[in-house]
Image 1 (tube, rainbow, N blue to C red):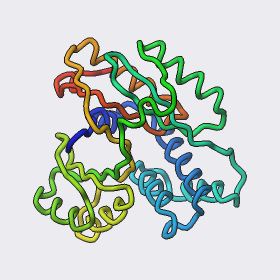
Image 2: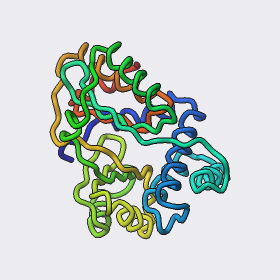
Image 3: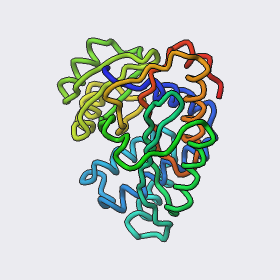
Image 4: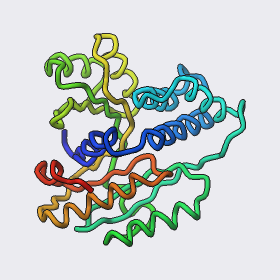
Length: 249
């Protein structure tokens, strides 16, 4: 898949092992709340909420917890008001980084993001300086135990644009508006996706051949991803599978 960042693969693989479940739950719940607030609490009518709901369920967030988050988003229950804020910057080696956050305090989150970049040899950029290097895509991952030709045929019929293997799963790419139809087509065929998400995918990749520099990039990405306000972090860094496999933070 052209331009797909392998950092996403590493992040998802490490996530279940390295992150406290409570932190994963909190990020999923916050995403559900904001989606419900912005588009209403009806899953059938709100595609963004439907994706957030599916992501929360895939992370094993309890159903009643998700339902309460939806009610906080729609105002039926009291809750904190979160704001979606994106941050752009450069990491070691000049790689581009996009950070998506949901914050209840813009000033605090902005200062903390700047500090994370500066401490790791990177720097924050002005809005728009990095964003043009990424495009929004729907991403569905499916277990490799499913037959490649079957997954591809069904996904393409559902509106997918591309499919590849990341070494641990089939990665199906689509336009954002086709994400739900791709997921539904796979579900209808008895293929249960491992994850369903909207992602910012790099249009081109920047090679980071030096192992030391590559690990600096990975440490920065991991530090950003661990921040409570961060929903997703994306990079155009092209790092070898060998370095990714040995990276331990």
